[in-house]
Amino acid sequence: MLSERQIQLRKLLEDLRNDHSEIILSNSEWYILAKIDKKEPTIASVAKNVDISRQATHKFIKNLAAKGLIEIIDAKHNKKEKCIRLTDLGISCYEKNEALKKELEDKMAVKIGEEQLQYLKNMLKIDWGL
Image 1 (cartoon, rainbow, N blue to C red):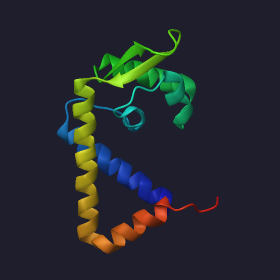
Image 2: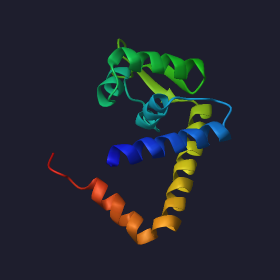
Image 3: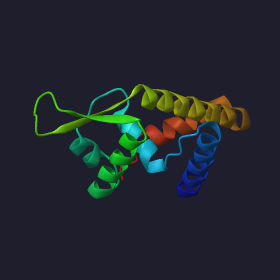
Image 4: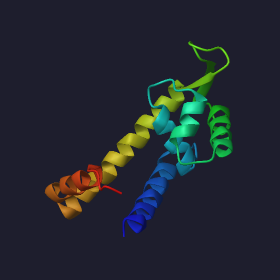
């Protein structure tokens, strides 16, 4: 049931994003942008912390850089490592995406009720011991 809802919500959010932006990104690219947020993580740490193969993560990072959403910079602590950060365009796209997610969440609250939505969010946050 959770998997079906996740697929439904991801598709709905993807459609909303594509309707509101001229830059088309895959869910994996959005996932990587979310991992970067306002930090400057190393490429290696992003690759480790996403559930995508290392090779695919590097490909997505190159695509994001080519679209002007991120830039690849030298790490301050180690010149051999590379870090990534959002560009102004990347920050703008990320903030628009967060607003769309909030809009979707607000629609859910209207449909199922604010209390039920909060209960659902709390249930998803707790440790299920799996």
